[in-house]
Picture 1 (spheres, rainbow, N blue to C red):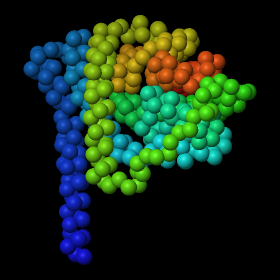
Picture 2 (picture 1 turned 120 degrees about the horizontal axis):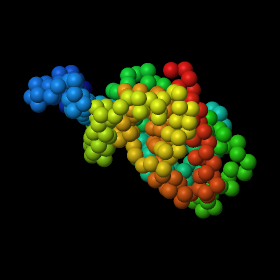
Picture 3 (picture 1 turned 135 degrees about the vertical axis):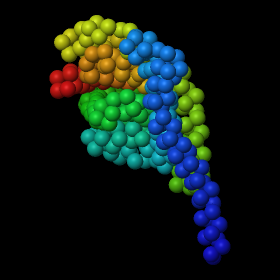
Picture 4 (picture 1 turned 90 degrees about the vertical axis):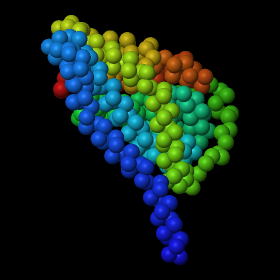
Length: 349
């Protein structure tokens, strides 16, 4: 018995030790980013902190490694947590829930479960097949892409926990209220394509409770690598655009266009964001630079949310299961919630 306990303890250390070492290396690397960026910009390159070019280069050299480090650490952590969820378990948790409570639970699950716009169709079909109300389903589908770990990590890294928390709470509120509103639309079921009601979704999948910590860490490493491979270029391009804005764009111009005094800036930002295609990795560095130049928080967050939550590719994907009228209703309700949020932030902050 003692030999067995020693063997199990040894195996646990073999699993956890690399993770602990990686965490220490990550923390040490994070501590040297700022002084290293300053040294590279102002000492090695000889640029002046008083010039536009110096400001832009320092911004770029600091933000790129900072955001990539934050992403790698948080994605690994969130991916490990996500191994405790599966689509079937998510549907089981939401099944039988009524409007209101179901919308709140669906939005919260949308934050912590590994789904994005690319999985919108199979998820939608699975939820409908499980008997989950359409309004509850939409709360999940709104929260899942809009409130993701990439957006939260980058907002935390660039603006601090207050703005990140504000984004989280507001995103949840929009997902919950929009889902309830869609659920109250008369004959909302008629907006779903007929074939969806006839599909039978399989129930077989890996039981997440059977995974070992070694399995969970392996999945988290794979997921972290896959996400970083997909977003690193967006991070660099987004930060490069943000650096150019940070260093060269006049403050007065942006303050006039996206400031609190421009009453039309919030709906204009949402309308501009809806047809665009980007993700948090590409849009948040631009948001950061816009805010530093005098743009209003509510306006830029409204722009960011419309780009992430109402992207054109997701609408095209959802067209497979939803009729145009319901898609238009979905866009109108979510866009209205984002516009209201933008005005509210500009009013109180």
